[in-house]
Image (cartoon, rainbow, N blue to C red; front, side, top):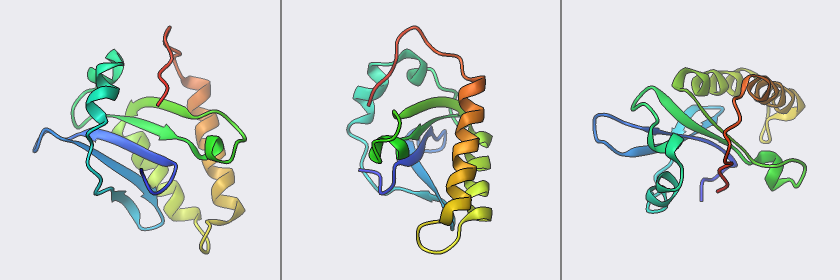
Length: 126
């Protein structure tokens, strides 16, 4: 129910809630959705339950999955990595759909994450 297929989820120490944000040409935009499903997601995955509040985020990339060109990707990353993606999108976005340059940059960004990722023994699917 996130308006796009690219988002990150972070637990906030001020209100002890999980916030969903998605990178956009305007910056990190917070989703106003309710998170009833979050309890189920976190209950099923220890790494997600143990994410450091305000410091780590679950970064979800379902762009390729939505286009039926690649599987969905899920990463637990430092929050600054998410804002690096936000900045990349702000810099490279053109027109309504972003243009080819931004999508090439996003692909390169996730290729870099894949190259550095530690793969858990159990895979999380949402």
